[in-house]
Image 1 (cartoon, rainbow, N blue to C red):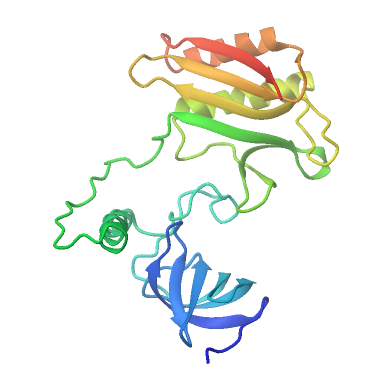
Image 2 (cartoon, one colour):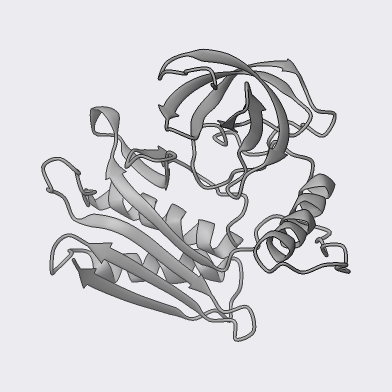
Length: 253
């Protein structure tokens, strides 16, 4: 019989692999445990927060033996934000792990044998690659404006000034909308009361066409001061690329 585990329990875990969403995976007493923040080859202490019949999930509270592939994440809010999962793993190792995921899927699900899978092609600069952005906007603690990403498995918005994986133009859009909201007192949506105006900011950069689209997803049918926002966006983006176009849409929920 496998050992019984409970929520809140702290266990020792030897990590042997990675799960589909970047969590470490290991077994203890024949029981599979998924550990958020752990890497293959590490020994960690995990606090369990989900316990099922055949597996459990938890988060790392202490690294007993670290992997040589562990690195310091470049993003200052990486541990709080739910947007990225593997910044604590060296980039070269990330590429190896992605290749292995392809092999595992084809062998386990596709029942393929004797596969030849080429190494994953990386980038010289692996940052600022996303050309589409959709970020939540909220009134944070003490009414402070928060624009960024949801914390993992929550609706709590982590405030992010610059996202390292977003195209720099998209970051600029979010920064300009932030400045516009503060300047003209445009409110963000409060989740509990459902009051406020702005719910999400969306941006899209046409890498080939050179066009930019900025979208506000709102809680109300009309938002004041949109003309001023258009002027701020045009002025701010033109500092970077004079030939970019701006389209502004306000969409009610």
